[in-house]
Length: 412
Ligand SMILES: [Zn+2]
Image (cartoon, rainbow, N blue to C red):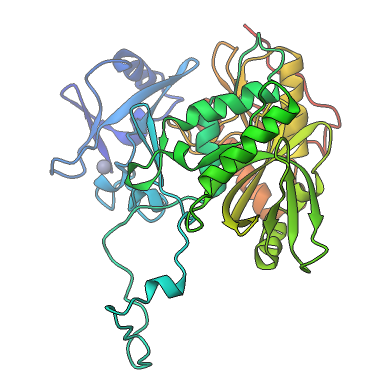
């Protein structure tokens, strides 16, 4: 039995969190917003076991503070082992927010570390002995997680607030959006606090086509002047074609960049496996397929060593599916204020497809596009139950059931 101490009184956790109990709700209402907080009594040590009283509409509930679930006794109802809470419980996150600065640990290597340059004369290589263990046991000390290029791109989009839509907006053109990304990059750093702007090439629109192409190519050349260093190139894919010289190699044509970026066969294969659908959507008029690529210079050509693709609508709002795209476009047409969450925030356990911000309380919006997958169905039900349990308003669309997008909650 988990007991909570609140303002000198002891309450049973299950009783206090029973939302059908008027007396319990009354107590939570009284202490909502107060400095007096319920604190779980399961252990006597000094770790934080305080709970926060939150309100959703007319109802009140309790939430643990971030990263405190393992502070409880294992028998306590509020306990969760660090494992089930995800890698973040043990590891420092790949993307860290420090004031205005976002620091990102990338998986992608931006320095070429060829074998030849590693094997210097003063460091004899002793690993040829087959009896020596090749790799050390994984360190028990938690390190820091790292993110791929797509995760990094999401952090950049978040910083540029391209995932937020204001109701009075009507359009967000290419030039303004890419400028916003470039500006956001000034507050993003990589490992060792290296400003990402030093490595980044965002294909920008300036004055006219010729001038834009010239400045973008110049930026790419400058950032790849050292053949050991990669540039991170961000742009909209206009076309993708097979190389006529190297079988299996792909050439990407980005908007406002008049040199192709080449994906060597192994990477081309990996990328089409991971992002196949998005490659097929290149050139569709109602959306943009954006690329983020680590690019090295090799003689006169530009070679991609790692790549991520994302889909956005015309206004640069990331969309995970064609159904989501329809919802985003309809929200814009109806002049709604909404956002596309790219990371978990607040007390939400699940990442909603959208958040609608112009109603009395924020609504989560979910598009359930997949019908024939049991795991997806189970996850969907779990998500909806979670929203119900926490008094979170949820708008949902199941395209298989409703051909037409249901009306959105009324603006207030
Ligand atoms: Zn506890």
